Length: 441
Image 1 (cartoon, helix red, strand yellow):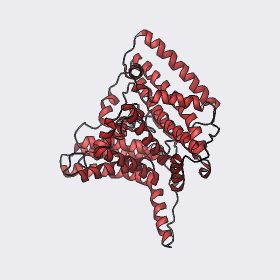
Image 2 (image 1 turned 45 degrees about the vertical axis):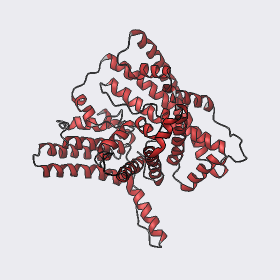
Image 3 (image 1 turned 30 degrees about the vertical axis):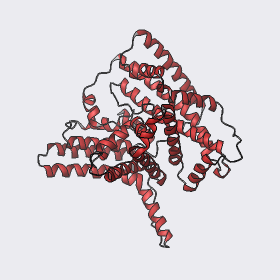
Image 4 (image 1 turned 90 degrees about the vertical axis):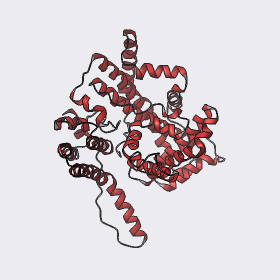
Protein backbone atom coordinates (compact mmCIF):
# COMPACT_ATOMS: atom_id res chain seq x y z
CA UNK A 1 0.00 0.00 0.00
CA UNK A 2 2.89 2.37 0.74
CA UNK A 3 4.40 1.62 -2.66
CA UNK A 4 1.09 2.29 -4.43
CA UNK A 5 0.70 5.58 -2.56
CA UNK A 6 4.30 6.51 -3.37
CA UNK A 7 3.87 5.90 -7.09
CA UNK A 8 0.46 7.61 -7.20
CA UNK A 9 2.04 10.69 -5.63
CA UNK A 10 4.54 10.99 -8.46
CA UNK A 11 2.48 9.61 -11.34
CA UNK A 12 -1.24 9.51 -10.42
CA UNK A 13 -2.44 9.08 -14.01
CA UNK A 14 -0.54 5.85 -14.51
CA UNK A 15 -0.81 4.02 -11.20
CA UNK A 16 -3.95 2.20 -12.37
CA UNK A 17 -2.28 1.15 -15.64
CA UNK A 18 0.60 -0.38 -13.69
CA UNK A 19 -1.70 -2.04 -11.18
CA UNK A 20 -3.90 -3.52 -13.90
CA UNK A 21 -1.02 -4.77 -16.07
CA UNK A 22 0.80 -6.24 -13.05
CA UNK A 23 -2.28 -8.11 -11.84
CA UNK A 24 -3.00 -9.45 -15.35
CA UNK A 25 0.64 -10.50 -15.71
CA UNK A 26 0.48 -12.37 -12.40
CA UNK A 27 -2.33 -14.60 -13.67
CA UNK A 28 -0.70 -15.07 -17.09
CA UNK A 29 2.48 -16.37 -15.46
CA UNK A 30 0.42 -18.48 -13.08
CA UNK A 31 -1.15 -20.10 -16.15
CA UNK A 32 2.33 -20.60 -17.60
CA UNK A 33 3.47 -22.40 -14.47
CA UNK A 34 0.38 -24.63 -14.28
CA UNK A 35 0.59 -25.71 -17.93
CA UNK A 36 2.31 -28.96 -18.77
CA UNK A 37 2.28 -28.63 -22.56
CA UNK A 38 5.27 -26.76 -23.93
CA UNK A 39 3.21 -25.03 -26.63
CA UNK A 40 0.86 -23.56 -24.01
CA UNK A 41 3.77 -22.52 -21.80
CA UNK A 42 5.35 -20.69 -24.75
CA UNK A 43 2.00 -19.09 -25.52
CA UNK A 44 1.64 -17.77 -21.98
CA UNK A 45 5.26 -16.54 -22.03
CA UNK A 46 4.77 -14.70 -25.31
CA UNK A 47 1.56 -13.15 -24.01
CA UNK A 48 3.38 -11.83 -20.96
CA UNK A 49 6.33 -10.53 -22.99
CA UNK A 50 4.14 -8.88 -25.63
CA UNK A 51 1.98 -7.16 -23.01
CA UNK A 52 4.87 -5.78 -20.97
CA UNK A 53 7.14 -4.87 -23.86
CA UNK A 54 4.12 -3.50 -25.72
CA UNK A 55 3.34 -1.11 -22.87
CA UNK A 56 6.99 -0.05 -22.76
CA UNK A 57 7.08 0.45 -26.54
CA UNK A 58 3.86 2.49 -26.54
CA UNK A 59 4.54 4.77 -23.60
CA UNK A 60 8.26 5.25 -24.13
CA UNK A 61 8.84 4.97 -27.87
CA UNK A 62 5.57 5.85 -29.64
CA UNK A 63 6.37 9.59 -29.72
CA UNK A 64 9.90 8.85 -30.96
CA UNK A 65 8.58 6.55 -33.72
CA UNK A 66 5.94 9.02 -34.93
CA UNK A 67 8.41 11.93 -34.88
CA UNK A 68 10.82 10.00 -37.09
CA UNK A 69 8.06 8.85 -39.44
CA UNK A 70 6.83 12.44 -39.78
CA UNK A 71 10.38 13.66 -40.42
CA UNK A 72 10.73 11.08 -43.18
CA UNK A 73 7.33 12.00 -44.68
CA UNK A 74 8.14 15.70 -44.51
CA UNK A 75 11.41 15.14 -46.38
CA UNK A 76 9.52 13.71 -49.35
CA UNK A 77 6.69 16.25 -49.20
CA UNK A 78 4.00 13.95 -47.78
CA UNK A 79 1.52 15.13 -45.15
CA UNK A 80 2.55 14.28 -41.61
CA UNK A 81 0.69 11.85 -39.36
CA UNK A 82 -1.52 13.45 -36.71
CA UNK A 83 -0.47 12.48 -33.20
CA UNK A 84 -1.10 13.39 -29.57
CA UNK A 85 2.04 13.01 -27.48
CA UNK A 86 2.01 10.17 -24.96
CA UNK A 87 3.15 10.90 -21.41
CA UNK A 88 5.82 8.65 -19.91
CA UNK A 89 5.10 6.72 -16.69
CA UNK A 90 7.93 7.16 -14.18
CA UNK A 91 10.29 4.21 -13.95
CA UNK A 92 8.63 2.13 -16.66
CA UNK A 93 11.96 0.83 -18.01
CA UNK A 94 13.01 -0.48 -14.60
CA UNK A 95 9.84 -2.29 -13.60
CA UNK A 96 9.26 -3.65 -17.11
CA UNK A 97 12.58 -5.46 -16.95
CA UNK A 98 11.59 -6.89 -13.57
CA UNK A 99 8.36 -8.26 -15.05
CA UNK A 100 10.43 -9.88 -17.80
CA UNK A 101 12.70 -11.64 -15.31
CA UNK A 102 9.61 -12.96 -13.53
CA UNK A 103 7.96 -14.55 -16.56
CA UNK A 104 11.23 -15.78 -18.12
CA UNK A 105 12.60 -17.27 -14.89
CA UNK A 106 9.31 -19.05 -14.22
CA UNK A 107 9.31 -20.33 -17.80
CA UNK A 108 12.87 -21.58 -17.40
CA UNK A 109 11.77 -23.30 -14.15
CA UNK A 110 14.45 -21.43 -12.22
CA UNK A 111 11.91 -20.53 -9.54
CA UNK A 112 8.23 -21.10 -8.88
CA UNK A 113 5.92 -18.10 -9.24
CA UNK A 114 4.56 -16.22 -6.26
CA UNK A 115 1.32 -17.53 -4.83
CA UNK A 116 -0.34 -14.23 -3.94
CA UNK A 117 -0.96 -11.31 -6.27
CA UNK A 118 -0.11 -8.93 -3.41
CA UNK A 119 3.38 -10.47 -3.27
CA UNK A 120 3.86 -9.87 -6.98
CA UNK A 121 2.68 -6.28 -6.64
CA UNK A 122 5.25 -5.83 -3.89
CA UNK A 123 8.00 -7.24 -6.10
CA UNK A 124 7.17 -4.94 -9.02
CA UNK A 125 6.22 -1.80 -7.11
CA UNK A 126 8.51 -1.81 -4.05
CA UNK A 127 9.03 1.92 -3.63
CA UNK A 128 12.73 1.93 -2.63
CA UNK A 129 13.86 0.83 -6.09
CA UNK A 130 10.86 1.00 -8.40
CA UNK A 131 11.60 4.24 -10.24
CA UNK A 132 15.42 4.36 -10.35
CA UNK A 133 16.72 0.85 -9.79
CA UNK A 134 18.63 -1.24 -9.17
CA UNK A 135 16.90 -3.76 -11.44
CA UNK A 136 16.05 -6.61 -9.08
CA UNK A 137 15.67 -10.02 -10.68
CA UNK A 138 12.86 -12.23 -9.44
CA UNK A 139 15.12 -15.13 -8.48
CA UNK A 140 17.31 -12.83 -6.36
CA UNK A 141 14.45 -11.66 -4.18
CA UNK A 142 11.63 -14.22 -4.48
CA UNK A 143 12.28 -15.91 -1.15
CA UNK A 144 12.75 -12.58 0.63
CA UNK A 145 9.30 -11.38 -0.42
CA UNK A 146 7.52 -14.13 1.51
CA UNK A 147 10.07 -14.83 4.24
CA UNK A 148 12.44 -12.14 5.47
CA UNK A 149 13.73 -10.93 8.81
CA UNK A 150 14.57 -7.32 9.51
CA UNK A 151 16.97 -7.25 12.44
CA UNK A 152 18.16 -4.18 14.35
CA UNK A 153 21.54 -4.51 12.63
CA UNK A 154 19.78 -4.49 9.25
CA UNK A 155 17.91 -1.31 10.15
CA UNK A 156 21.08 0.43 11.30
CA UNK A 157 23.21 -0.70 8.34
CA UNK A 158 20.38 0.29 5.98
CA UNK A 159 20.19 3.71 7.61
CA UNK A 160 23.92 4.25 7.12
CA UNK A 161 23.68 3.27 3.46
CA UNK A 162 20.63 5.47 2.86
CA UNK A 163 22.33 8.49 4.43
CA UNK A 164 25.41 8.03 2.25
CA UNK A 165 23.25 7.73 -0.87
CA UNK A 166 21.22 10.82 0.00
CA UNK A 167 24.42 12.80 0.57
CA UNK A 168 25.79 11.64 -2.80
CA UNK A 169 22.66 12.85 -4.53
CA UNK A 170 22.01 16.10 -2.68
CA UNK A 171 25.42 17.36 -1.60
CA UNK A 172 27.46 16.33 -4.65
CA UNK A 173 25.29 15.46 -7.67
CA UNK A 174 23.01 18.49 -7.36
CA UNK A 175 25.97 20.90 -7.33
CA UNK A 176 27.52 19.12 -10.32
CA UNK A 177 24.12 19.23 -12.07
CA UNK A 178 23.78 22.98 -11.57
CA UNK A 179 27.23 23.56 -13.09
CA UNK A 180 26.57 21.12 -15.96
CA UNK A 181 23.24 22.79 -16.80
CA UNK A 182 24.89 26.21 -16.75
CA UNK A 183 27.21 25.13 -19.55
CA UNK A 184 25.25 22.54 -21.55
CA UNK A 185 22.13 24.76 -21.67
CA UNK A 186 24.07 27.90 -22.66
CA UNK A 187 24.70 29.20 -26.17
CA UNK A 188 27.18 26.56 -27.33
CA UNK A 189 28.33 28.77 -30.20
CA UNK A 190 30.14 30.78 -27.52
CA UNK A 191 31.60 27.70 -25.90
CA UNK A 192 35.32 27.64 -25.14
CA UNK A 193 37.53 24.61 -24.53
CA UNK A 194 37.82 25.19 -20.75
CA UNK A 195 34.05 25.66 -20.50
CA UNK A 196 33.50 22.45 -22.45
CA UNK A 197 35.80 20.45 -20.18
CA UNK A 198 34.27 21.89 -17.00
CA UNK A 199 30.79 21.02 -18.25
CA UNK A 200 31.84 17.53 -19.25
CA UNK A 201 33.51 16.90 -15.88
CA UNK A 202 30.48 18.26 -14.02
CA UNK A 203 28.06 16.03 -15.91
CA UNK A 204 30.37 13.00 -15.58
CA UNK A 205 30.28 13.27 -11.79
CA UNK A 206 26.64 14.37 -11.68
CA UNK A 207 25.34 11.25 -13.38
CA UNK A 208 27.57 8.94 -11.31
CA UNK A 209 26.80 10.39 -7.88
CA UNK A 210 23.14 10.89 -8.80
CA UNK A 211 22.56 7.35 -10.03
CA UNK A 212 24.79 5.58 -7.49
CA UNK A 213 23.24 7.75 -4.77
CA UNK A 214 19.74 6.59 -5.73
CA UNK A 215 20.98 3.00 -5.75
CA UNK A 216 22.52 3.41 -2.29
CA UNK A 217 19.26 4.87 -0.98
CA UNK A 218 17.28 1.99 -2.46
CA UNK A 219 19.67 -0.63 -1.06
CA UNK A 220 19.60 1.09 2.33
CA UNK A 221 15.81 1.38 2.50
CA UNK A 222 15.45 -2.22 1.38
CA UNK A 223 17.92 -3.37 4.03
CA UNK A 224 15.91 -1.57 6.71
CA UNK A 225 12.92 -3.69 5.64
CA UNK A 226 14.85 -6.95 5.44
CA UNK A 227 15.51 -6.96 1.68
CA UNK A 228 18.96 -7.55 0.18
CA UNK A 229 18.92 -5.66 -3.11
CA UNK A 230 21.87 -6.23 -5.47
CA UNK A 231 24.74 -3.76 -5.76
CA UNK A 232 24.55 -1.50 -8.81
CA UNK A 233 27.88 0.36 -8.88
CA UNK A 234 31.45 -0.53 -8.00
CA UNK A 235 33.63 2.57 -8.53
CA UNK A 236 33.29 2.45 -12.34
CA UNK A 237 35.65 5.35 -13.01
CA UNK A 238 38.69 3.32 -11.89
CA UNK A 239 38.13 0.93 -14.81
CA UNK A 240 41.10 0.20 -17.05
CA UNK A 241 38.92 -0.56 -20.12
CA UNK A 242 35.36 -0.01 -21.33
CA UNK A 243 34.78 -3.75 -20.85
CA UNK A 244 35.65 -3.37 -17.17
CA UNK A 245 33.59 -0.17 -16.97
CA UNK A 246 30.46 -2.12 -17.86
CA UNK A 247 31.24 -4.65 -15.15
CA UNK A 248 31.22 -1.79 -12.65
CA UNK A 249 28.60 0.65 -14.01
CA UNK A 250 24.85 -0.05 -13.61
CA UNK A 251 25.68 -3.68 -12.92
CA UNK A 252 22.07 -4.86 -12.72
CA UNK A 253 21.36 -3.56 -16.24
CA UNK A 254 24.59 -5.09 -17.57
CA UNK A 255 23.72 -8.42 -15.94
CA UNK A 256 20.18 -8.31 -17.33
CA UNK A 257 21.32 -7.59 -20.89
CA UNK A 258 23.97 -10.31 -20.64
CA UNK A 259 21.70 -13.08 -19.30
CA UNK A 260 18.46 -12.25 -21.09
CA UNK A 261 19.75 -10.99 -24.45
CA UNK A 262 23.49 -11.45 -25.10
CA UNK A 263 23.73 -15.11 -24.02
CA UNK A 264 20.46 -16.16 -25.76
CA UNK A 265 21.90 -14.59 -28.94
CA UNK A 266 24.89 -16.90 -28.57
CA UNK A 267 27.09 -14.59 -26.52
CA UNK A 268 30.78 -15.15 -27.17
CA UNK A 269 30.25 -18.84 -27.99
CA UNK A 270 29.52 -18.24 -31.64
CA UNK A 271 31.13 -19.61 -34.75
CA UNK A 272 32.64 -16.38 -36.03
CA UNK A 273 34.01 -13.09 -34.76
CA UNK A 274 31.57 -11.30 -37.03
CA UNK A 275 28.61 -12.78 -35.18
CA UNK A 276 30.27 -11.97 -31.83
CA UNK A 277 30.69 -8.32 -32.81
CA UNK A 278 27.11 -8.24 -34.09
CA UNK A 279 25.87 -9.54 -30.73
CA UNK A 280 27.87 -6.91 -28.83
CA UNK A 281 26.71 -4.11 -31.13
CA UNK A 282 23.06 -5.13 -30.94
CA UNK A 283 23.08 -5.44 -27.15
CA UNK A 284 24.59 -1.99 -26.71
CA UNK A 285 22.38 -0.33 -29.30
CA UNK A 286 19.38 -1.65 -27.38
CA UNK A 287 21.01 -0.68 -24.07
CA UNK A 288 21.37 2.84 -25.40
CA UNK A 289 17.76 2.95 -26.59
CA UNK A 290 16.63 1.63 -23.17
CA UNK A 291 17.98 4.82 -21.61
CA UNK A 292 15.77 7.10 -23.66
CA UNK A 293 13.76 7.53 -26.82
CA UNK A 294 16.23 9.67 -28.74
CA UNK A 295 18.92 9.05 -31.33
CA UNK A 296 21.69 10.35 -29.09
CA UNK A 297 21.12 7.39 -26.76
CA UNK A 298 21.39 5.00 -29.69
CA UNK A 299 24.65 6.70 -30.70
CA UNK A 300 25.88 6.50 -27.12
CA UNK A 301 25.12 2.77 -27.08
CA UNK A 302 26.92 2.33 -30.41
CA UNK A 303 29.87 4.35 -29.04
CA UNK A 304 30.28 1.94 -26.12
CA UNK A 305 29.63 -1.08 -28.30
CA UNK A 306 32.41 0.08 -30.63
CA UNK A 307 34.91 0.30 -27.78
CA UNK A 308 33.88 -3.13 -26.50
CA UNK A 309 34.64 -4.54 -29.95
CA UNK A 310 37.94 -2.63 -30.05
CA UNK A 311 38.77 -4.09 -26.63
CA UNK A 312 38.41 -7.58 -28.07
CA UNK A 313 40.40 -6.70 -31.18
CA UNK A 314 43.42 -4.98 -29.64
CA UNK A 315 42.62 -2.11 -27.27
CA UNK A 316 42.42 -4.11 -24.06
CA UNK A 317 45.87 -5.62 -24.73
CA UNK A 318 47.29 -2.14 -25.26
CA UNK A 319 45.72 -0.82 -22.04
CA UNK A 320 46.98 -3.83 -20.09
CA UNK A 321 50.50 -3.19 -21.35
CA UNK A 322 50.76 0.39 -20.10
CA UNK A 323 50.87 1.59 -16.46
CA UNK A 324 47.50 1.21 -14.74
CA UNK A 325 47.13 4.92 -14.02
CA UNK A 326 47.29 5.73 -17.75
CA UNK A 327 44.82 2.96 -18.60
CA UNK A 328 42.40 4.40 -16.04
CA UNK A 329 42.88 7.91 -17.41
CA UNK A 330 42.32 6.85 -21.04
CA UNK A 331 39.20 4.87 -20.14
CA UNK A 332 37.89 7.77 -18.05
CA UNK A 333 38.33 10.22 -20.94
CA UNK A 334 36.58 7.85 -23.36
CA UNK A 335 33.72 7.54 -20.87
CA UNK A 336 33.47 11.32 -20.46
CA UNK A 337 33.22 11.86 -24.22
CA UNK A 338 30.43 9.30 -24.20
CA UNK A 339 28.56 11.30 -21.55
CA UNK A 340 28.56 14.34 -23.83
CA UNK A 341 26.73 12.25 -26.44
CA UNK A 342 24.39 11.00 -23.71
CA UNK A 343 23.63 14.54 -22.51
CA UNK A 344 22.96 16.34 -25.82
CA UNK A 345 20.02 15.28 -27.99
CA UNK A 346 20.57 17.92 -30.68
CA UNK A 347 23.15 16.68 -33.22
CA UNK A 348 24.43 20.16 -34.09
CA UNK A 349 24.99 20.96 -30.41
CA UNK A 350 26.67 17.61 -29.91
CA UNK A 351 29.01 18.28 -32.84
CA UNK A 352 29.82 21.78 -31.56
CA UNK A 353 30.52 20.54 -28.05
CA UNK A 354 32.70 17.60 -29.10
CA UNK A 355 34.68 19.83 -31.47
CA UNK A 356 35.31 22.42 -28.77
CA UNK A 357 36.64 19.76 -26.40
CA UNK A 358 39.60 19.22 -28.73
CA UNK A 359 39.80 22.64 -30.41
CA UNK A 360 41.97 24.35 -27.76
CA UNK A 361 41.11 27.70 -29.32
CA UNK A 362 42.64 31.04 -28.47
CA UNK A 363 39.94 31.96 -25.97
CA UNK A 364 41.05 29.96 -22.96
CA UNK A 365 39.38 32.07 -20.28
CA UNK A 366 37.50 30.15 -17.65
CA UNK A 367 33.92 31.06 -16.95
CA UNK A 368 32.56 31.83 -13.53
CA UNK A 369 31.58 28.66 -11.73
CA UNK A 370 28.88 28.24 -9.12
CA UNK A 371 29.84 28.42 -5.43
CA UNK A 372 31.45 25.26 -4.03
CA UNK A 373 31.96 23.72 -7.49
CA UNK A 374 35.74 23.42 -7.27
CA UNK A 375 35.59 22.03 -3.74
CA UNK A 376 32.98 19.42 -4.67
CA UNK A 377 34.82 18.59 -7.88
CA UNK A 378 37.82 17.64 -5.73
CA UNK A 379 35.50 15.65 -3.43
CA UNK A 380 33.98 13.91 -6.46
CA UNK A 381 37.37 12.96 -7.85
CA UNK A 382 38.54 11.75 -4.43
CA UNK A 383 35.58 9.43 -3.85
CA UNK A 384 35.37 8.27 -7.48
CA UNK A 385 38.97 7.03 -7.55
CA UNK A 386 39.35 6.15 -3.87
CA UNK A 387 39.36 2.37 -4.13
CA UNK A 388 42.17 2.43 -6.66
CA UNK A 389 44.29 2.68 -3.50
CA UNK A 390 44.63 0.17 -0.65
CA UNK A 391 43.21 2.47 2.02
CA UNK A 392 40.24 3.16 -0.26
CA UNK A 393 39.47 -0.54 -0.51
CA UNK A 394 39.53 -0.75 3.29
CA UNK A 395 37.09 2.15 3.54
CA UNK A 396 34.79 0.57 0.96
CA UNK A 397 34.75 -2.69 2.92
CA UNK A 398 34.07 -0.79 6.15
CA UNK A 399 31.17 1.26 4.80
CA UNK A 400 29.59 -1.02 2.21
CA UNK A 401 30.60 -4.65 2.65
CA UNK A 402 30.49 -5.34 6.39
CA UNK A 403 27.29 -7.02 7.60
CA UNK A 404 27.79 -6.87 11.37
CA UNK A 405 29.57 -4.02 13.13
CA UNK A 406 30.93 -3.75 16.63
CA UNK A 407 29.57 -1.18 19.08
CA UNK A 408 32.36 1.31 18.35
CA UNK A 409 31.80 1.10 14.61
CA UNK A 410 28.04 1.57 15.08
CA UNK A 411 28.66 4.75 17.09
CA UNK A 412 31.03 6.15 14.42
CA UNK A 413 28.78 5.25 11.49
CA UNK A 414 25.66 6.48 13.27
CA UNK A 415 27.22 9.88 13.97
CA UNK A 416 28.53 10.17 10.40
CA UNK A 417 25.08 9.23 9.03
CA UNK A 418 23.29 11.74 11.26
CA UNK A 419 25.60 14.53 10.07
CA UNK A 420 25.14 13.55 6.40
CA UNK A 421 21.38 13.31 6.84
CA UNK A 422 21.22 16.71 8.54
CA UNK A 423 23.35 18.36 5.84
CA UNK A 424 21.27 16.71 3.08
CA UNK A 425 17.91 17.72 4.54
CA UNK A 426 19.19 21.25 5.13
CA UNK A 427 20.28 21.43 1.49
CA UNK A 428 16.95 20.11 0.21
CA UNK A 429 14.90 22.56 2.26
CA UNK A 430 17.07 25.57 1.40
CA UNK A 431 17.35 24.97 -2.34
CA UNK A 432 14.73 24.70 -5.03
CA UNK A 433 17.14 22.89 -7.37
CA UNK A 434 16.77 19.12 -7.00
CA UNK A 435 16.70 17.54 -10.47
CA UNK A 436 15.44 14.01 -11.05
CA UNK A 437 17.16 12.83 -14.23
CA UNK A 438 15.39 9.46 -14.45
CA UNK A 439 11.92 10.60 -15.51
CA UNK A 440 12.75 9.55 -19.08
CA UNK A 441 13.50 6.00 -17.83
